[in-house]
Image 1 (cartoon, one colour):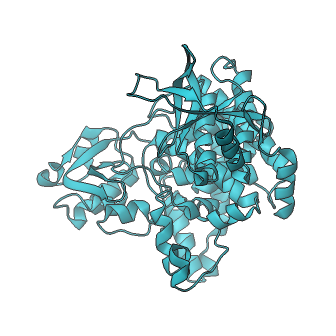
Image 2 (image 1 turned 180 degrees about the vertical axis):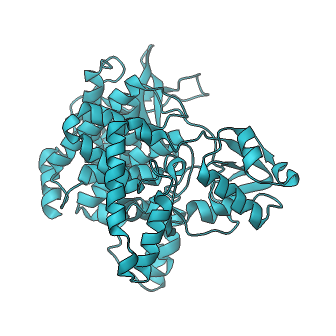
Amino acid sequence: MRRACLLLAACMTWAGVGLAGDVSVGGVHFVFMEPEPGPPAGDPPLFRRVTDPERVARLGRWLENDSARWAADVYRRARAVAVARGFAGNQPAEYFIALVPDGNNGAVGFRLGTGETIQAYPRTAYIQLGPEEWRFTTTLLHETGHVALAMLAGGREVPKREIAAIPHTVAALSDRGTAFDEGFAIHLETLVAQISSAPEVRQRYRHDQFLFGPEAQMRGEYYQHSSDLLTFAQTAARYAEVRDNNFAFVSAFKGPDYLRVQMEKARDFATLRDANQLLQSEGFYASFLFAFIVRGSGTPPPDRLRQRQDKVMTALGEMFASQAFTPEAPYLLEFVESYRQAYPAEAGEVLDAFLDLTHGVFVDPDAASLWREHYLAALRLDLRQLGREKIDADRARWHTAATKDPKVLYSRLGPQLRCDVAGRTVRLVGLGTEAPLSMDVNTAEEGIVCLVPGITDAEVASWLAARARAPFASVEDFKARAGLADTTRGSLKF
């Protein structure tokens, strides 16, 4: 690990402030902006450049950390891919950061006031970042992932749908666009957490300190299982659980409690998430991208990781150019197809990674039961019932089928079918939000289905069983096959 960190430092320069006030990291010039004073001046937002030398120097010092250096490097390489695709006019070489109170998001399009003139950047991706030092060691890298995707898409933000009743979290199911966008950003954090030995990175993502007593406060072991939830981003889960592909499995909590089902990282490892659920899981997207980049018997050196990441971004650029850019797009499948076409010599590798991490649920309707029988046999230490010969034969069959016809991977997909649940709300006190309970009837996990007013155990079982046989093709199909009583169905507003 220390060797990897030293190699990383050797490949990137430390932050430096130029004569003109630019802050340079790894060959990338950061331009800091702030909102123009006075009332908002239309859309897109209007900023002015930060020019105070002392303030710029302080911001430059905040960039002296592993995460910020990786962010600069990812920006530079993603822009190179975008420029090669003809998007040089959209994205300048400078990385623009707007210092906005409570800012923690990527965006596309802004205006920059310079003296008497206003310059428009309608297709430029940038981030809005709160003006606190800690955000430069956490939020900056994550939001750079969103910026990179927007660049690769030609100055477009990934389209999303409002399906989940809460903002996204790593363990939750949201919608396809959000899961893809957030998963890409999270895989960057997981990658840096894997290879960096910098103290601030290890303290954030790894359980490397064991503190006891009241003086330890929220960093102490008493609070270990609640403190990660209080970040809402679930930083520790973004490393350990993503690294281990734990979000390929359904929630371990089956009771009628929306927040526990969506936010707890505990998994039922005997039960796989199905194809549609995986397409709405940012945790799984992050696992796939991370695992594919670090694949092998040991973590590759940083230069190899960059080469692999460049291929991933090149394939993403091709995907955005050739596929529909809609909230319904199955981005993960489209990426696999794009990567196989861009790099034929690695077509088998990316397909194997996809099939193994999804446990075959995109291809085989019996994949979930195959895994469940194997897992429960392992719990019993029943070596005769592990079924390894059948599993390996099926894995080879899945690979052959998907190689012959990539559309096989789409065979288990259904549409996103959003509904509101009458009389139910989800409240997050700390974020000051309260929203109607909403769900996708094709992906809602058992504990969320149980929240439908008046629903019986038999109706829950019927809903989930019908969906397992075949995803609901439409609202009408759901009403016909889910097996709900009229009164139960009446509380779902499509």
